[in-house]
Length: 314
Image (cartoon, rainbow, N blue to C red; front, side, top):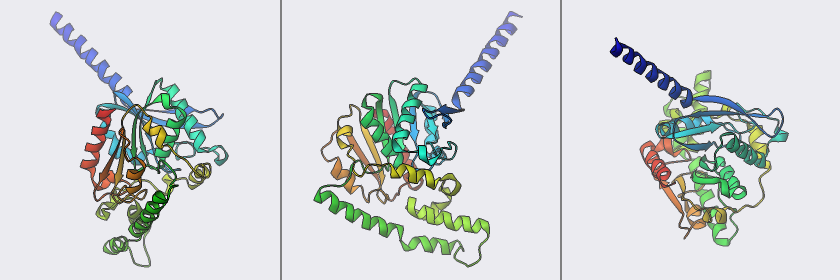
């Protein structure tokens, strides 16, 4: 009888632990910002050190980053959110600026009761993370930037020369014949298309901007209703004419990892990033071969390895 009671107690405690773990592993809630009535959608799951995931855009939303990052939840507590004006965080355009985005992150840090933030930021989200670092350097620990916006405006003759070269190479990449060839292979080049076929043709063109291997076009997420052009325009309009975060990054006490595809639409072959950070010891630039802006789709295994190695350095 005592043995049976002991078994029941152990079973009850195990059940309680499982329940608690499940409750902690996935939560959705809304962060009240400093602007009355403006709330940001937040999704968190996993257990361990907290990683703040900053999506790109501006005007996109978080869900396209779930596939490449959710596996990290086995070792890390992941916090995703939709920036103000993005899909699940509606906001008037008049209240959207990059500086509002920064204050929203600070509000989120306070709400989560975190002393320092570990960032994993993609594309324009990288600009937000660097801008946050500039204003709140004492609140930043880890900084992993995936295909981020340039850390500074090209100003020297050498920088402008390389920028012009990379822009031409990116233009060639965006206009490569393989895109129309893939549309033709899928039978989507005819005049009359069904709604599904129109969506697929759009997705191939969208993939042509973001990935190198067009055979993986079906894995592309986001765009269309998941993107708010007005929110993106409002944030972009508030950006300064010039910026320079290189000194802020060099002065950061922790390792910084920048992950780029060699056919990335932010910088072809990482040439400009290598110039900006030449000789800066705390910055490591990892260039993924045969990959685009969403390098986790082109080279998932290499992307995961680089990401995990970067996280272990923080």
